[in-house]
Amino acid sequence: MAPAYKLTYFNITALGEPIRFILSYGGLEFEDNRIQFENWPGIKSSMPFGQLPILEHNGKVSNQSVAICRYLAKQVKLVGKDDWEDLEIDAIVDTIGDIRMKLATYHYEQDEKIKESKAIPLFSEIIPPYLEKLDAVAKKNNGYLALTWADLFFVGILDYLNTMGKRDLLADYPNLQTVKKNVLEIPNIKAWVEKHPKDNL
Amino acid sequence: MAPAYKLTYFNITALGEPIRFILSYGGLEFEDNRIQFENWPGIKSSMPFGQLPILEHNGKVSNQSVAICRYLAKQVKLVGKDDWEDLEIDAIVDTIGDIRMKLATYHYEQDEKIKESKAIPLFSEIIPPYLEKLDAVAKKNNGYLALTWADLFFVGILDYLNTMGKRDLLADYPNLQTVKKNVLEIPNIKAWVEKHPKDNL
Image 1 (cartoon, each protein chain N blue to C red):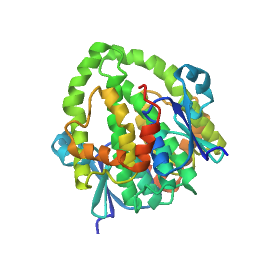
Image 2: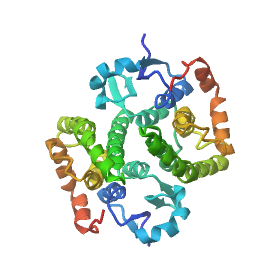
Image 3: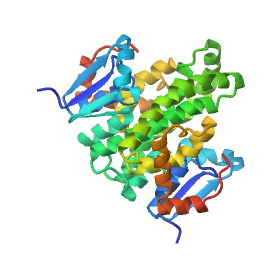
C-alpha cells in the first residue's frame, strides 16, 4: 500500500526539510517525491499556486510549507497545550520566516555589488537582534524554542538559512546551538538525517 | 475595566487591520493602542522581537500579526471544521503573505530606476498567477476564500497591498471583488470600518 502522505519538493532540504522532520518525528510513512530542477518548468503549472512543496493526503492536496508543518504537527501531537501556546509557537515560526525573507533578499540579489552592500547591515544590524532574542527564548526553555514543531521547523530549515547567509548563523548563539543538538539527537530525526539524500543546495 | 485585549500597532491599517477586523467581527472589546511613528525609536527595544503589532491578553504578550490573527480566529470561532480545513485556510493566508512580500520588495526599493524595472515582471508575470488562483478559489466558494479568518485577513490587508502596488490589485478579479464586498458587508466589520481612524499609509 502506498504511504498515506506524499510530499513533493525539490531534491534539497530548504523548505522541504522541516516537513520531512515532522513526518519522521512522528513515524509517519511518506513518499518523499523529489522533482529534479530540470523537470520543474513542465510541472509548475499543474501545481496549486505553481509552488512546491505540496502535501497530498487522503486524496487532497495543499501547498505552503509552514501551513503543512502546522497540520502535520497536529497529527503527531507536537503542538502547544492551549491556544496561547500555539500562538507562541506560531510567532516563533513566523519570526524564523522573517529571518528567512531577509536572508533571501540578500541571497537572491543578482547584482554582486548590491549584494555586498546588503551584507553589511544584514549581518551587523538586522539579523543579530532576531537571533539574540531567539537565543534568549532557547535559554529560558532549557535548549528548546518551544519543544514542539517550532524546534523541528527551526533545525530543519537551518541549512538553508546558513547557505543563504554564507555562514554559521548560530556561531555566537550557544542556546540555539543546544536547540540544534537536541533536535538532531531525537532518535527519529537522527535516523532521518542519517538516511536522507545529501543536499545540493 | 480595561478591555481584555490590547493591540499595539502604528496608526495605520497594514498589518494591524486584519487583527482589528477579527476582533471586531467577534465583538471582542480591545484597546486600539496606536503608536506615532515619531515615538517608535524610543519604544522599539522594549517590544518582543522589536516589532509591531503585538497583542496583550491575560498578562501575556505576543508578536507576529498572522499568528495573532490565527489565535483570535480561534477565540471567535472563525476557523475550519477540521485540521485539513485549517491547513487550507493557513495556506491561503500564507499565499497572501507571499504576495505581500513580493509587493514589499518593489514598494520598499529605494532606487527609482530599479523600482521601475521591478514593476514590469511583478505586475505582468509574478503577481497575476497568484491572484488568478485566489480568484478561482473565491469563485468556487461563492465569493469567499474560505468563509473564515482567511477572508478577513485578505480584506483587512488589502489596502496595504494596493498601496504598495500603487494600483487596485483586484481590478481584473471579479470573484475577489465579491470577497471584499462580502467581508465589508458583515455588520461588525462595516461598523468597524465606518468608525476607524482614517489611514495614513
